[in-house]
Length: 197
Image 1 (spheres, rainbow, N blue to C red):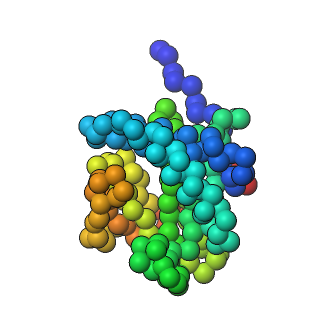
Image 2 (cartoon, rainbow, N blue to C red):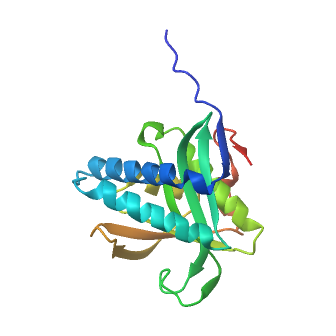
């Protein structure tokens, strides 16, 4: 009987500036694979998403309240996530929403989907937020992305009923979770015993 090899040890650590191009490529590859899984065309998406991801990563990294982490298996980057202080008007501002963390740019290489990498990344940004006066977390995810919706539900996020179209015309849904409620701490359990730097 053949056994699948165990996943490589996963390390969650802060992202470095010189890793942004590779992380933007991970974001773009995940977006193309997600769209293909939903039966949507990937045409033209890769270049646009790499550029958008790179710009978003640089902008978020420059915000003092941001947490930007990556997942690495040995020397290979396999995913990323960031979280930052939420702003009014769905990020357009002006002004911060007190106590609200905005989770964004959660992406995993498609070949690593199903290995718990996304769980580890989201757990890392939520754990970092607890010690920084955040009481709630929010995020948007594509309605067609069954993987992400299941991940966020397992971690205690619930749909708020808000929906809108993203820049590509796809429907996205808004989710929130409490960072203080005892019954919402499923996200504190590490599924792969990842090391967090």
